[in-house]
Length: 248
Ligand SMILES: [Ca+2]
Ligand SMILES: [Ca+2]
Image: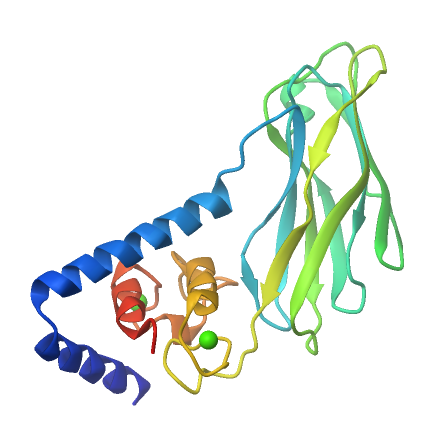
């Protein structure tokens, strides 16, 4: 029924609006969409950077998801350590796994998963055993979380006490940013396209949609209400439908 309503509303709009105007509006909306995608995925490197890269931009209560701690060194490094700040009332840490960062040296590594103390995962560290260094960006560690079934709002994750060290044991300047992952209320939208159920289809809903773009059935960020044509993936066709609902 939801699907039919969406299609009828598109046909209705096409009859009222000239094709040229509609194409122009779609082009404008596509440009905004691409800008948001670029902002989500492209972060420039200044000094050594440590970024949190979640497996999904949108999570729903009960989801299991991962966050990569990705390092972009601006020089050769041999070890690092950090603390991760999270909200223990909303998520539980299931696992911390070493990434490929130091393994790319071909040498043996030492890795510590750290210890959990309330809202802090402390003293995660890794280093190369031997004389090699690495300077190519890669994932230092991957943290697996489970989102609580009662969680709502958004989830903030941040890094503290990040230390990268070089061959001589000097610590290097690093930049890291907190991230916010939106928690999606699983109740279906009352109005098609109004994913946050606030009564209008606006930019906030667009951010939700951008987070689900490219997902397939079974993916953590897939929800049936993003998949307007119900074909199992959220793709450009669904974006066209969403664009037609925008502003309503
Ligand atoms: Ca809305
Ligand atoms: Ca679809």
